[in-house]
Length: 122
Image (cartoon, rainbow, N blue to C red; front, side):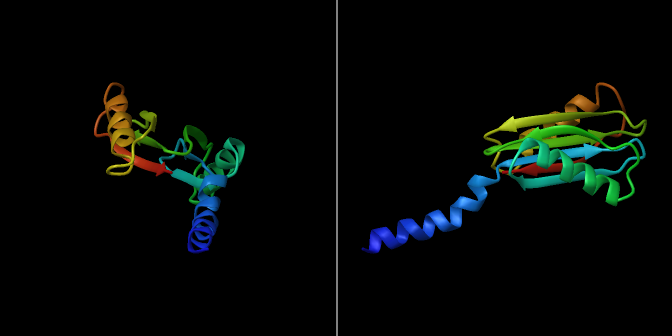
């Protein structure tokens, strides 16, 4: 009986995270980033990331990277507004480190003084 209760408790705790595994990061032409995690579908994640970007004052926001369960997404931009994006899997220790580093490396090929603007992991 104890095992059944423990299993049921785990399912209740784990189910929401497993049921909503998608996230996205968005970036705007005026250097504003938005993100969303815990969305039910990739389209929902895109919508929430765009809304977050716009709510923060972003103009012409665009989704730059997406992630799903066990992965991370990151965006980086430099002084000229150009940047890089990355999506990874198994990037959880420390969370998002690979995605953030990859986005920075992508950014420095096209811009200077790059920095990570947003990232999300599941």
